[in-house]
Image (tube, rainbow, N blue to C red):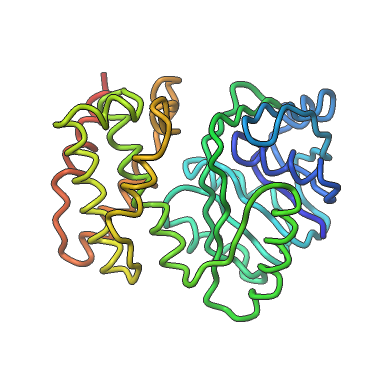
Length: 296
């Protein structure tokens, strides 16, 4: 199995590095400057789960030759530009972006491929090109596809990922896979970014915990309308068990002066809520606070 990873940032770099270390034919597709760094120095992974290691996947600025799997691990804000680097149709495309709307975009672009719904649960960052820091022990890739033709390649991919020490599984439905992550991520991203605090103080401060719970409850209501059954206790339980210093990629993006994924994460929830006439006052209030922070 030949796997290309588009976007070797925190998520993509971790996946590509783990696959290459496990003996998979893995390569990364990135900007020319990033390719040069990885070609010279490799990918340096610092992971509390997988250990510290260096991997040396091939790094190319454009994907022209056929591959079995394309893992798309860019930010949602950079997806449109990044997919221009891919000039072939892989057999299967696994997106690991935040949000929902990228699925339709990728299915339109890769009409000759099987594009599955996919998510990854991970806390990883790229402090500089070629370096990935994975700071918590939770790691899971979920995928699903309504097309039965995807079943066999998804099962093969889960085995390949698991062999590389990246737990992976095939879910019951696309909606269940996507919303199971989005409800939790949206609540975490919105609260940590609005208040610029890690999860611990948010959980331990009653009024802030109420915001966290409110965002989860509203997200679960929207998920149910979209065909996914997410008990409030599931995302709340995950966030209750998470370590106190857990933050979010949105919070890190704001701190670094990068564009936050407001449209991809809470935007996706609020658009779905509007389709079903569901009110989400907590999420809307948190988004307004984040926009105010970014504007300042």
